[in-house]
Length: 199
Image 1: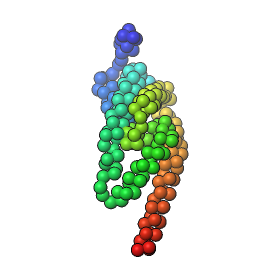
Image 2 (image 1 turned 45 degrees about the horizontal axis):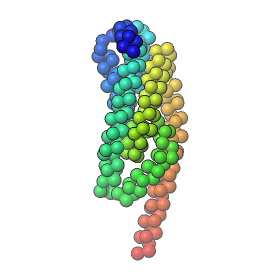
Image 3 (image 1 turned 90 degrees about the vertical axis):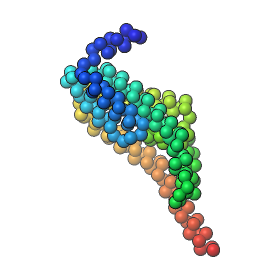
Image 4 (image 1 turned 90 degrees about the horizontal axis):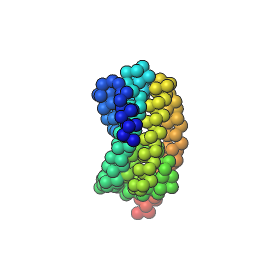
C-alpha cells in the first residue's frame, strides 16, 4: 500500500498550493457551504489535462477532503441544527412541527435525502452515523472521481453534465420535500383561522 502511495505521489506536479485549494474547497463544499468544491475540482482537472497538475492526487485530495467535510457538516447539524431550528421565536410551534415532519420524511428516504441535501441537514434530521458515513464515503468517492476524471477527459463540458444531472435531482427532491411542508403550512394556517373564528 505504501508503494502505491509513493508511486502515485511521486508523479505529482504543480505547486502544493493547488492541492491545498482543492482540499479546502472540497471540504467547505461538503461541510455545507454552497459552491466552491465543484468549480475548483473542475479547474484542477482541466489543469491536470494540460500537465500542470497530476490528476490522481487531485482526485484523492478532493475525495479525502469531501469525506471529512461531510462528517464535520453532519456533526454540526447533529449537535446544533435542531436546537437552532426549534429555538424560541416567531412560528416556533410550526417550526417544531416542520422539524418533526422533516425527520419522518428524511427517515423514509434516508439514502436519497443524504445524497441530495447538505450534510448539516442530514445531521439535523438525525441520520444515523453508520448510514450517513457509508453514504458520505461512497458519494464523495463518486463525486471526486466523476468530476475530477470527467474534467480531465472532457474539460469544462463536465460542468454542464453535472449541472443538468443536479438540476433534475433537485427538482425531483424539491417536489418530494416541499409538497408536504406546504400542505402542513396550509393546514396550520387553516387551524389557526378556525380557532380564531371560534373565540
